[in-house]
Image (cartoon, rainbow, N blue to C red; front, side):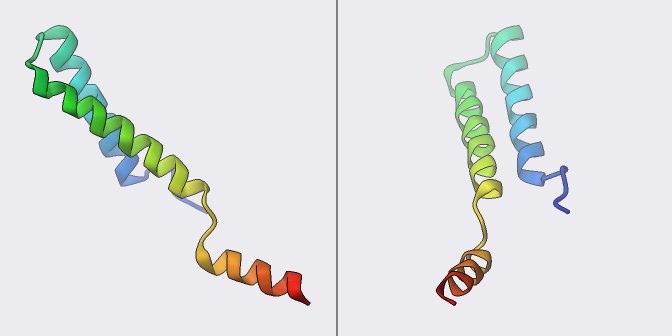
Length: 67
Protein backbone atom coordinates (compact mmCIF):
# COMPACT_ATOMS: atom_id res chain seq x y z
CA UNK A 1 0.00 0.00 0.00
CA UNK A 2 1.32 3.43 -0.94
CA UNK A 3 1.69 5.97 1.79
CA UNK A 4 -0.60 8.99 1.61
CA UNK A 5 2.06 11.08 3.32
CA UNK A 6 4.15 11.63 0.21
CA UNK A 7 6.94 14.08 1.14
CA UNK A 8 6.78 15.86 -2.23
CA UNK A 9 3.04 16.44 -1.91
CA UNK A 10 3.51 17.73 1.63
CA UNK A 11 6.20 20.12 0.37
CA UNK A 12 3.94 21.27 -2.47
CA UNK A 13 1.05 22.01 -0.10
CA UNK A 14 3.43 23.82 2.24
CA UNK A 15 4.73 25.97 -0.63
CA UNK A 16 1.17 26.79 -1.69
CA UNK A 17 0.30 27.74 1.88
CA UNK A 18 3.34 30.01 2.18
CA UNK A 19 2.46 31.60 -1.17
CA UNK A 20 -1.13 32.20 -0.09
CA UNK A 21 -0.09 33.94 3.12
CA UNK A 22 2.70 35.96 1.51
CA UNK A 23 0.74 37.05 -1.55
CA UNK A 24 -2.72 37.57 -0.12
CA UNK A 25 -2.08 38.72 3.44
CA UNK A 26 1.27 40.54 3.26
CA UNK A 27 1.10 41.59 -0.43
CA UNK A 28 4.53 40.07 -1.06
CA UNK A 29 6.85 40.98 -3.94
CA UNK A 30 6.64 39.39 -7.37
CA UNK A 31 9.15 36.62 -6.67
CA UNK A 32 6.70 35.14 -4.16
CA UNK A 33 4.65 33.92 -7.11
CA UNK A 34 7.48 31.50 -7.92
CA UNK A 35 6.24 29.54 -4.89
CA UNK A 36 2.87 29.17 -6.60
CA UNK A 37 4.51 27.97 -9.81
CA UNK A 38 6.73 25.43 -8.05
CA UNK A 39 3.94 24.23 -5.75
CA UNK A 40 1.50 23.60 -8.59
CA UNK A 41 4.22 21.91 -10.66
CA UNK A 42 5.06 19.54 -7.80
CA UNK A 43 1.41 18.64 -7.21
CA UNK A 44 0.82 17.85 -10.89
CA UNK A 45 4.14 15.99 -11.19
CA UNK A 46 3.46 13.73 -8.20
CA UNK A 47 -0.09 12.96 -9.35
CA UNK A 48 1.21 11.93 -12.77
CA UNK A 49 4.11 9.90 -11.36
CA UNK A 50 1.88 8.06 -8.87
CA UNK A 51 -0.57 7.17 -11.66
CA UNK A 52 2.10 5.88 -14.05
CA UNK A 53 2.83 2.15 -13.79
CA UNK A 54 6.43 1.23 -13.01
CA UNK A 55 8.64 -0.10 -15.79
CA UNK A 56 8.71 -3.54 -14.10
CA UNK A 57 4.90 -3.70 -14.15
CA UNK A 58 4.69 -2.73 -17.81
CA UNK A 59 7.36 -5.27 -18.76
CA UNK A 60 5.55 -8.06 -16.91
CA UNK A 61 2.30 -7.10 -18.62
CA UNK A 62 3.91 -7.24 -22.07
CA UNK A 63 5.46 -10.64 -21.36
CA UNK A 64 2.10 -12.04 -20.26
CA UNK A 65 0.40 -10.65 -23.37
CA UNK A 66 2.92 -12.35 -25.67
CA UNK A 67 2.16 -15.81 -24.27
